[in-house]
Structures are given as structure tokens and as C-alpha cells.
Length: 444
Image (cartoon, rainbow, N blue to C red; front, side):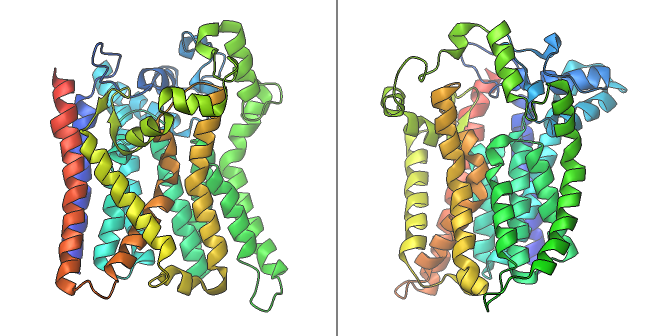
């Protein structure tokens, strides 16, 4: 137990050191010809900067936060992360008027989200895996995937969305194992609230939460516990509605009944945007398959899901991506091909299949949404849009690795060597990407 605490402290320190390095050294605005700045941060930063200056939320109509060329602003999107960043920046502005200090203040909020994410992932690992080595593998895969860590180092809403997915999956597992105690209700309702107010690409977790909630009251004898469902459902619904209702009511009032603001956003784009910015593959008459072929879509997406820093301008050696592709593919395949060792399935008894259906759905949905938006709205072969599916994916990777290590011909000594090699692989990829590949670009 003492060693577990020491490893946990080192786990958090490693994250803080590496994330802090990126947050401090990566540039903010476009830096041609290397473009080392984080993707779209200069555009997203307008929202918390506005909040810091005026103390109120901007609407989507504010010219001050409008994106040149596109004609709309991030004020139409969910802004809970920006609110927290903006008011923290406003607090810092009482001490200093340095723009650099305000930028670091905004970025530090996402580093804090990353710390919360790392803690919840650790708590989730304790529920999922009995073997300590597997727990840490699950933690390292989620937190130290280079792109996952990168998302916690600059101003965006992705970081909070990733945190929300960890909270929701933690609640799912807790509910299946322990029922609807206070902790599980807190994590489920809290996760849904911050998911709803941070990032639409993660909304699959909200839908799956509803389905899994309804399924959890179906008893073994085929009867349905309507009383329990209504009691717990009304409690969770009330908490969620209080948490998110204000945002959608605000949108309804400001945007003439447009609850999520997308219709109004598109109208603003038509009114103020440059038509060349909206010249999509769909409008040009290409098919989705042609989009894939013309732009090497899946290769670019996979690379930037693993490690694509700057404005999709900083990549590692191709062998890093080949190693990750091989490792992920082998472990996920092992999970679904090997039957032995599926402890989660045994724990969930007859409900395990529905749980896994929803886990797979939440892992795959971000890819489907990325394809849809790339084709019809704004071509973006960016792997960071897939990160909402990270936690379910890494569960299957870790559980698949567990099945591989459970093969009879693998001795105890060989298992330990396998874990050590994978740990070294994860950390080597991260440190190489940050300190050997990215930092020289930032310092140049």
C-alpha cells in the first residue's frame, strides 16, 4: 500500500511536470513557418478573455469574439470550461495585467482538469482490475498517451469533456457493482452535467447513461423495478436539469428558440463568413469515400489521435505510431477473441453484454461524428476529436493485455518483463514527443 501511494504521487508529478512544460513553452498565436501553437487556441481564448475583461458571458453575436473568415464565434458552443478559465483569469488580472500571465492562468485550469482526470482514472482502475500492474497500465494509457496529455495543456473544452467521460464510466461501473449510492449518483449526475456543458462529441455518454440507467432496474426474473427507477431517476434528473437548464434556457431566449445555437451559428456564418471557408466536400459534390482517398483521412486521424502537437504540424517518428497501432490492435483483438479472463463480464453477470455494447458505442461514436463533420461542415482530420472515446478504448486495450498475459505458456517472470516493457514504451513515447520532438520547435 505504501508503494502504491508513492507510485500515485509520482504519477501525478510526472503529469504536472510534462503538462507544465507544454503549457509554458508552446506558443499561443500562429507561429509560421513551424506553427507550434495549439489548434484553434487563439480563437477559443477569445471567450475566456472576454469573460475576464467584462465579467459576463459573451453571446454568439458579439463581434469581439467572432472568428474572422468563419463569421461565427465559439460563444455559440457550450462554455462551462471557458467560464471557469475566464473567472480565474479575471482573478489573476487583479494581481497583474500581464497577458502572458492571463494565458497561463487559462491553461492552468485545463491542467487542473487533467489532475482530476488522472485521479478518477486511478479510482476507476481500482474498480476494474484486481492486478495492480493492470491498474497502472490503464492509468498510464489514458493519461500519458501523448495526445491525451496534450489536450490538458491549452485553452479548450476537450479537457473537461474527457474528465466527464471518466466520471460517467466510473459511475456506470460503480452502479453495476454497488448500486445507486451517493458516490455513484454524484459521479453520474456530475459527469452528465459537465459533459453536456463542455463538448457535443461526448454526448454519446449521456445517451448511454440513460440506456444503462433504464437497464439497471431490470431484474433477473424479468420484472422491472418501476418504483426504484422513478425514485432514482427523478433524483438524478433533477440534479442534471438544475446543472444544465440555465444554459439551454439562455440559448432558447438569445437565439429565438435555438436550444443548442447551431441554426443561429450557421446563419451568422452565411452572413459574415467567407464562402471559401465553408467550401465543404459535400458542397463540392465529392463522396465520403473520395474524401477519405484524397486526404489520407484515416492515417492523419490516427497519427493526430496518438501524437499530433502544434496546429497538426508537429509529429514524431513514424515508428512511434507503428508501435502504438500494433499494440492497440493486438490488445483489442485479444480482448474480443479470447474468452478467458473477462472478469468484468463475470461481475456484471447477465447484464454485461449491454454494458459492453454501450462502451463500444461510446468509443466509436466520436469517429462517426468526425467523419460527418469533416464531410459536411469543415474538413478536420484531427484525432483529438476522438478523445471522448479514450476511456472505453483503453479499457479494452488493458483488458486485452490482461488476457494475453493470462496465456498458460507465459511464465510469471515473462509477465513482469512484459509489463515493464509496455510501461517503458508508454513513457518513452511521451517524453520523446514532448522533449525531443516538440520542445525544440517551441524554443526555436
